[in-house]
Amino acid sequence: MTRTSGTLYVVATPIGNLADSSPRSIEVLRAADIVACEDTRTSRTLLAHHGISARTVALHAHNERQAGEKLLRALREGSNVALVSDAGTPGVSDPGALLVEAAHREGLRVVPVPGPNAAVAAYSAAGFASGRFLFAGFLPGGSKKARSVSLDGLDMPWPVILYEAPHRVLETVEALLARFGPERELVIAREVSKKFEEIARMTLAAAPGWLAAGPHRQQGEFVLVLGPGEQKPAGLAEGERLFKILLEKMPASDAAKLAARITGLPRNALYRVALGPPAGGSK
Ligand code: SAM
Image 1 (cartoon, rainbow, N blue to C red):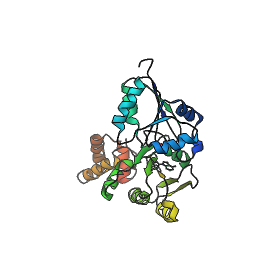
Image 2: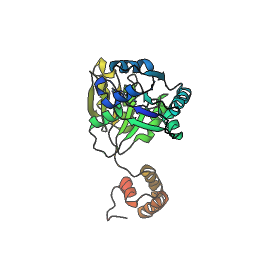
Image 3: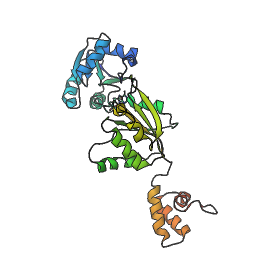
Image 4: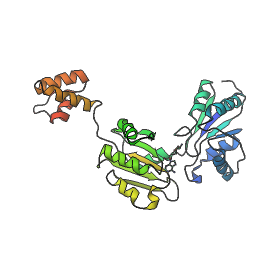
């Protein structure tokens, strides 16, 4: 990094409530030589609200590489660039990460200006006491089968956060219900920080009904927070399958020993899932 290089500020902006702009984010946007926007029209509304008349350039999913080159040049030449997306934190299901990566590669200074993010806002209001969560973003589009396959990796013993579009939210909730069962909990965070905000926690069984309970219920922006599943050692389902096959040919203690050797899973756990807890205990 040379002394004269500028700084790339990654600036979070409101997800629906203009009052959520932090004083620091406004200061950084005001002082920036260039504001790189996902959509210049959207961001100009925010800038105008704060009386900022910065130079804006477009940096969106379709021009991120070319526009990024120009911004890197400007940074190298000493301009400070503030990167914003349409709403929330750039790079989170939004463009921005390619420019940030390139800036790091060039040894340029990257400074986050933290603030709104729909996933974290929804998680904070969901109330799942878990030390961790998985942010899974949008499920891939496509056929029902492809979407169902995309749920394969989401059965976690901690909450999973999804973004969803209004026209697909019901379909996604139904897919979650089919996959994870009626008892699993779900928080639907709709229109977070906006006038018609709703944060509702329910079982998956109740979720389709909640969404169908009024015409507005499938309108707006959604975050889904799927509650944690049962804690199972990784690979337990496969271990259980193997144990049951071996049981057809040998006594349970031998089958458990062999299945544990093959899978690396504890014998105890294999017994528990396949047969219930062993009578005298087992290592
Ligand atoms: N970068 C953004 C962030 O930090 O949250 C996310 C952008 S992503 C393109 C847009 C999706 O985020 C929406 O489809 C919705 O799932 C979620 N989202 C954004 N604003 C929201 C809000 N006010 N309420 C609920 N969900 C929101």
